[in-house]
Length: 436
Image: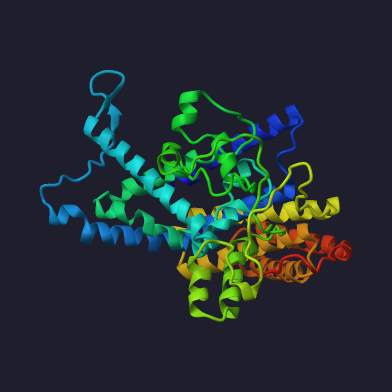
C-alpha cells in the first residue's frame, strides 16, 4: 500500500476534527455539495494514477538508468537509500544511520524545490494551469479541498522532477519523498488554525500561508507556491503574508459540481480560443502564455477583479433534501467501488480496470449533476442505474459471486430509480456546465 493510500484514515480523522471544530465554533466551513465534489475529484485523481503512474515513474526510472551523472562521473557516489533509522541491536531503542539520514533529508528538500517550480509554472503557463486549476476551483477552504486533485496534471508535471533523475536519485526515494510532501500539504488546507510561531511561519508552509495561495483576491493571486518549506517563496520573491481572510476560488468561477468538467473545462476553453484565433503566434500564446490571456478579437483577457467576502456569492443551487440524500448514497457506493478497484488494480487486467474506473467516473459525474439539478443528469443516472440493475440481476442468477450482494445491488438500483422518478421535475437547470 502506498504512503498516500495508507494516510487516508488520517485524512478522514482530521476532517472529522475539522467538522467538530466547525460545530463548536459555529463557523460553516463545509458544504455537502462542495465537499463531495472535492472528494470526487480526489477519487478520479487516484483512479487516473492507476494508468498515469506507469508512464511518469517509468520516465523517471529510464532517465536515472541512462542519463544519471553517476554513469558519466564514476567518482560520484550513489545516494544511500537504506532506512535511516533502524532498531538498535542488543538493547532497546533505535540506531541512526547518518549517511542515509542525510541522503533522505537532502532528497526531501530537493523534491520540495522541484515541487515549488512545478507549482509556480502551473500558475504561469496556461496549458499547465488547465491541469492544475481543478485544485483551486472550490469556493471553500477546508480539508476536503486538499483532496481536490487533478486527474491529468501528473501527465505534465513529471518534467520538473527529471533533474532529480539526472542527479541519480533512486526512484523509490523520489516516490516516497514526493508522497510525504503531498501528505504534509493536507493539513494546511484549513481555517481552523490561525498563525503559528514566528520560526514555524518563517520556515514552513502553514495554513495561513496556503490560505493566501487559494485566494482569488488580486493581492493574493499567484503567491505562496510552497509545498513544505515556505523559504522557497521567500527566496524567489513570491511570498505574501496573510492580512485579511481571502475569498476562495478562481477568477472565472467553475459553477459546477461535476468532477469531469472540473478537470477539463480550461482545456476546452484553450482549444476553443486557439481554434478561433487568427494568427499562429496568438494560438501558441493561448496555449503556453499566462492563463486568461486572449487576443483582442476574442474579447477581453481574464484579469483578477477586486472581491469582497461580504458580497461574494458562492455557487450553491438548492436541492430537495431527499435528492441530496440520493446523491450522497450514490457517492458512498462509488467511493467503495473506487477503494476496491484501487486495492485490486495491480491484479486486474488493464481493460477491466479501465471499465471499472469509467463506471465510477460516470457515477461521480452523476452525483455532481444531481447537486446542480442539471437536465443531463436525469438520463445519465437513469441509464447508469438501469445498467447496474440488469448487470447485478444477471450476476445474481448466473454469477460466481455472492448472490446476496448482487441482489442487494438490484434493490439499491431500483430504489434509486424510484427516487429519481419522484423528483424528476427538480432537474430544470440547462445553463450550468455541461457533462463533458
